[in-house]
Length: 292
Length: 120
Image 1 (tube, rainbow over the protein chains, first blue to last red):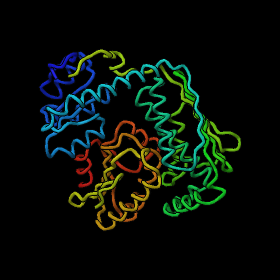
Image 2: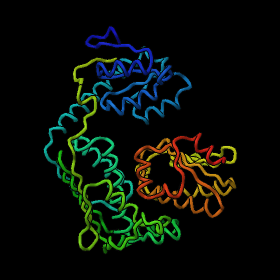
Image 3: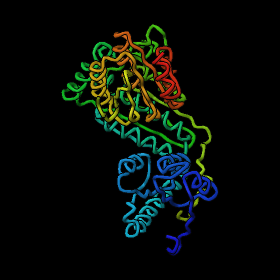
Image 4: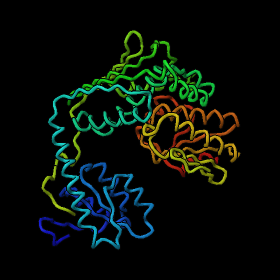
């Protein structure tokens, strides 16, 4: 790697030393061992993901460390190369990962310049689509720099709650009171209704208006609606062990504003953003850096 | 004991340990509750009255997990048992406190403290 034209390689003795070097000079890519003193490869991947999300990490794995490698990939490592194949595969893997990382950086730079985004979806009562929708909106928020990562997770929790409510309580009309009695019956009824009209044919409509200052998400279902004021207060000690209202509580806590329409089948969630907290990486973009 | 996608259960001496494996938002509600049935079944087989919930692998969760915890607690409480939670992220703790669930169970920083508390 040191001899590769155009690459400047910095070496670190362990994970802690690597972080200190990254702090001084953000690289384009990190290649690391898994087993290291002080801070191991897994911890290093986690820390890099948190503080330098655009810096990809390639792992060098030894025989027998496959399980940890899988864990590291889940944590956010970009790729891995078995140690016995370093000579033949490392360079090619570095080239591939660098190429992908450059595209990611360019995408992030472009998204930071996006002034406004308006998207609309019409989705079935499908929980996979709901989770993917939450991920999509979280990615859009990240791209526009509306808030920091911790706030983005909070917004994701609120959106998930609103969409699940629209599906289960709105379109499928299954009540929390049934879940209180029998959670199996609750999901069985939801499963059954999702296959029969009129519930099956109902859709969830999502409209998202995003700018670097504010996000407004409107979620509408085709159910009969409900009166949110009639939900029991989940924080009242008398209701602590009842299942209702916690989703709405999370939505109200994590968003700047939550309001329902008169029918109760449309919720508007607004998040006003403070100036975005930039990651270390966006302060030191390292667009033309080194491989370390 | 189940090596589940979302919950993993183990017996540590006579303490029934439930590890939350990933944020609930990444799975559908029904998957969580199907897996909860496995946890309840394991709990019944273990005959344990001391339950430890370890959140070390999940930085956040929503109302589906809160509801799963409530259902698990109903079973533990009915058998005269105790439940302690540990290794919560700041956001996870905030969510539990919002729901006032910190009034129901002790929340401690790490597994060792939780095991000591359950042993008292």
